[in-house]
Image (cartoon, rainbow, N blue to C red; front, side, top):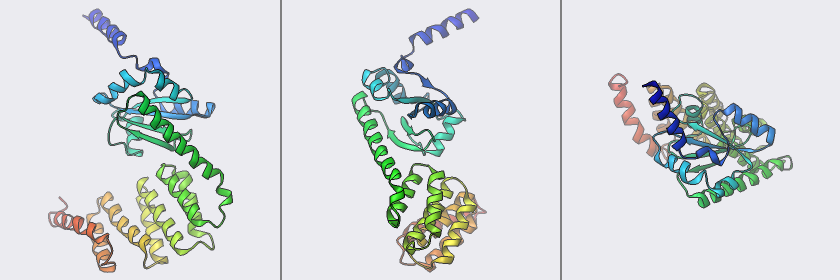
Length: 283
């Protein structure tokens, strides 16, 4: 029986789609990052799951194609199972992967250079990959020009926000903090920097730092869109923490302080459910 099982295993490997014939797909983040740093290349991460039919179609139809091989010839290839309860699951959470197939394009620091969702035949996938890489190159040119931005505070804020959108928190947060404290920064941009930093902390699950940042902004400003969004975010953070009472109180205070805010409409959807759960002991 054991010999039969072993034979079947060999046959399965022999008959499996030639997924890895298109190139060497690494299986760990560490190995991919080491190779990317050594070769100064981007990493293409195939986020997949065994149940994903479209992922297997990529394996059969796209990966072995000459078009795919050419498009990725100067990239490090990495495959991560989103349900491995390890690096794949962690990456899915970090980069908000909620549908499959999804491909991440990362730099050697594991910051997001691009994102491609869904199935596409070889030519379309190659075009999407090229488009993502072109946009990333343009972004990196803006980064190189950053020393020349000087008092162009809006451009500096936009750059920090783009780092944030790429999950490059080690690069976004220091830039935001500088805009929060640098002399001469307009109040509106300063306040937006506070809000964006609070968002960054919330995304990183640094909830106490996020709330502390929001409280600091509330001491500086008493009105403005950034403050409104920050105080609304405070309620969301409390909900994320499971502190329903604090969330409800935050939203009630918000409605009283900013009755004309467009965010009140969102609160009117959330608050009744919070109050219902509180009346039922949090259930």
